[in-house]
Length: 299
Image 1 (cartoon, rainbow, N blue to C red):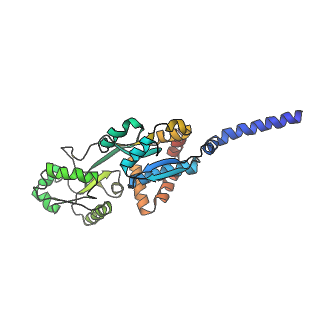
Image 2: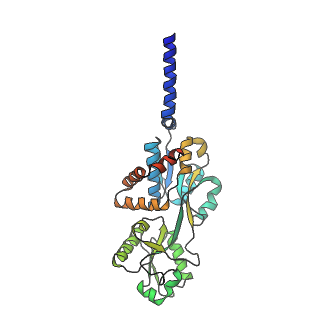
Image 3: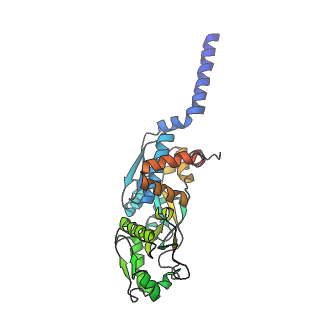
């Protein structure tokens, strides 16, 4: 009888120890559905979703399914429950139309990074006393230095639509300027050539972007506010997400917040190697931040 009681006590202690040391793993094992994470084919989105996926899968034991789609389809997917979460909600201005339409059907967990913005950028070696504002572009001397060109990206992009309006409102078309359509890669290639030669250039820009980690750039002031102001990028989840997933998963998404400078550096490193290598390096170099995202504990 005594031997049986001892065995029972040992068994109880083992169960308690398993609960203490393997609680999160057991919790992950009990949740057998993939966490469906929406993303768009933007470098910022890829950096974030691959970082989140790596942590949730390798460190917390959950399965993550990445669902690539246009931003409007992501809003729709979160609203109707087909997607668990999306991490590319630009507010309050850039995606205002989508937010107005879907806000009542999604849950906003708050920003994953701040200081996001759209605008026109120039290399910092261009003197501020010559070119500091979009209004300065009408100066004939400045126009000549720039060959009357603003280098843009894809014609349908939101920044290009805003840029077309800026061209009209600031009188740049009357001053002989052209807004050149290209691609993201074409824009950064033109910027790289200009920087190498110390030439003047104005490009359509947005933050975060790896070009701000690679080169010393600044935004031109926009007195009319046509290119947008301060933006925040939020995480949205479907209704019922909190009730359905383990607490630690929901709380991870609540705590997930990455400094924009870190994100731009991660994107630059991914460009030089791969997103997988850049994500691994970020996790290795930021153990305290990763631990806080996972547990809420400050080391």
